[in-house]
Every structure is written in C-alpha cells, then in structure tokens.
Length: 525
Image (tube, rainbow, N blue to C red; front, side, top):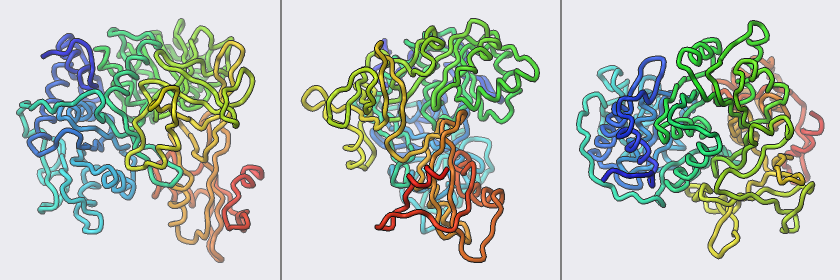
C-alpha cells in the first residue's frame, strides 16, 4: 500500500517517487537522477541486501564520498529494514575498523580507494570482521576494487544486480533508522541511535521553520556523514525538492557557478564557508540571486556577515541555529530577528521544548546561566552499547518514564525567552561544525615518533567556533618544526582534527594525581 504520509524515513522517497517520478531528485558534478531513478537504485540495493541475508535491525555502513549512490544507499538500507550509518570518507582505517566492529555492521558499501581500505581491514587477520558483507559499486576494477578473494568476506558489484524484489521487513517507527557516530570524551566515537520517529519528526520540523517546499533546490557541500549534511538530503527527498550535491568546498568559485547555473534556493553553511564567500565577494562582487535561504550552524555567524550575504542574494532569509547530533536541532532564530537579536540562537524548533536548570536542579529565569535541557520526539534513543554515557545525557523528564536530553551546555535566556549560548561544560571541541575529541587527537599525536606527551584543548575562534591547539612535550633530542609536526598529524587524523597550532613545551601542568591540568593550559593560552 502506498503511504499517504511518512511514518518511516524511507516513506518520503516512496511518496516523492510516486508524486514526482520524472522530477530531478539529485544533481552532482557527474550525473542527474530523477526520483524514479533514485527509487529504483535504492530498491536494487535493498534487494541485494536482503538476498545477502541482511534483516530488520541490522546495520549497514556507507563508506562513500558524497554521491547519488550514498543517498541511494541510505534509502536502500532502510527499505531492507536495516539502519544506515554513513562513514566520513576521511576516516582513517583504525577508526573505520572501530565503527564497523562496534556497530556490528552486517554490510559496508564502498568504492575505489575506500573499497581498498575496507579490503585491507578484512584481509588482515588482526582486523578481519567475520560475516561482514563488502559491497563494491560499479566502475571499480574487475577484482572488486582490490578486494582479496577469500571466504572471510564477500564482494558484490551493484551494477550486476537488477532485481528490485523486496520482502516487507516489518519496520515500525520505533525501530532504529540510523547510527550517527560522533566524537566522545572517551576517545572513541559514540554511535547516536536515532529511530524512524526521531528522524521523520526532525525533517518535518526543519522544513516547517525553514519555510521550504517542493520548488526548492537545496545545496549540500557538507559530508553526508555529518548530520547537518545528511538532513539536507533527507529534507529534499521529504519535500520532493532537488538536492544539488557537492563533494567539497575546496573550489569555492566553482560552487558559486553551480549555485547560479542550478538556481540553488537554499545554501547551508558554516562560518568558514561564508567567510570564504565574503572574501571572494570583496575582491570581485558575487551574485547568487536565486538563493532565498542561508542557514548557519556549528559556530556563531558573525553579525557583520549578514549584510554581505544579502548583497550576494538580495531578499534572502538568514537563519542562525544551534543543535546536537543527539537531537539534530534544538533551536533557531527567526530570520526577521537576526539583526535585533544578534547574539541569540532563538527558540525551540516547532513541536519541541527547551528549559534551563541551575546547579541546584531547579529551573532558572531570564539572565541566569543554566544547563539546557531539550524535550521532543527528536531526542535520541541513546548511545549504541554505551549505557553509562546514555544515562549521562538522557535524564528523567516531566512524566514517569519520559527521558529528556541534557545538553551539558550553558545558556541564558532574555526576558523574551530567547536563548543565548554561554559555553560547553564538557571537554569536546566543536570545530568547523565537527565534534573533536581531545582524547582521540592526543592518542594520535602520541604515536608520532619523538612525542613524550601531548595535551589538546579548544580555543575560541570566530570562524571555526573553536580551534584545536596542541601542547606537545618531545623526547630529548627530538625536534620538529610546527609544519613538520602538522604533516605527521595529518597522516593520522581527519583534517578537521589536525591542530591549528602546536606549542612545544618542556612539561605539561599536572594535578597531584598526575592528570593534566587543562584549565592551566587554557589560562596560559
């Protein structure tokens, strides 16, 4: 039976394929696909998964660059009854192995150099994952993208699979739809569990307050592994709109041309993206008249950016927002208030509630700093296999059995109830819209030859939100320039985790118990 409205996340694609079969669903640098074609590709992937034994509740990893196949993989996993997890293509092999092992993934979809990384893990007895199905996209070498041929894993080529036959998996809205891995204070990434109910509600609330419809053409240049990027695709499919999908912002002039050529109406970004655009605009005025929405999250959008954005796109609405992966989005500022409430991140998104609690556990009023709590259908189920961390974030709510999200971030409200971000109460660094675990960075730096100790902190940065700073103690006789040290770090970390600056010190300040006093590092700057 054709769903009339989405109960499950994949229902959005089913409905849009029926209503907008010949409409362009996704545009990339390489191809354009209609909703009918996207639905067919997702259905073939789902059929292959089911034939290979993937069942309701299994996890399917998608280890790809931003592409049509990444989106098809997301919906294909859902059609098969599985939950999807998109893995950032920058992810190093040790972290990839952790995520695949931790999630108990039943299958992983990859191609090219990424397929070879998967193959390397599966071929090594020390990292082999028995029962993991490796799927390789069409276009790779005949040997399946370099994958060894043995009985520890299987390789399939999706181009050879034409069936769309599916059995109904019996998924309900409370089932797991996605695992979104985000950095944790333990040094290993945490899998945020999101149900179909969580994600269907979130995409509906987002399109409501952003005032979007099927006529929109939504740009995405952020990784689909990053929930801000992921939801651009989900919103587009939900609306039957068009997604203009890019792999990177490395060539901003080319992005501007694509925006103009494709008539992009929604431009999501983070402050570093907008800073680059405005720098180009100052040198040679840019015009993107089709853009009707600029959306910003991850770090505060400086007030002085707004006039420049409006020069490039007269009449556009500029949205400032705040959120966490654990609930997708918390609040937004109505664009009409962006100049009158310049430092605010607004109020709770539609259908949700926020409130502040003081150190005594009681609600606080305007002008008083408190910890932000979030109620709503978008609050995560918890962290995968991490009950203690789940209890740290999910607290008893208003009603018996209800759980609400404790953000552990400090906020204040003004007399009108608008929220103002004051700081983070945990150690996680949020840089360029990504969460960076200091422990993860420190562990990687410790593997650099000649490093005795390393400590990492976040320091304020207007564009990045926070920048990563490393304090490094070298062994006697070891020497590095800052650039040479960064090159070593780049070989071990994703680019957004590499320290912006490195300070070589004789010793790290420590407590009596031997713990590094990071507060002292912050104070010495």
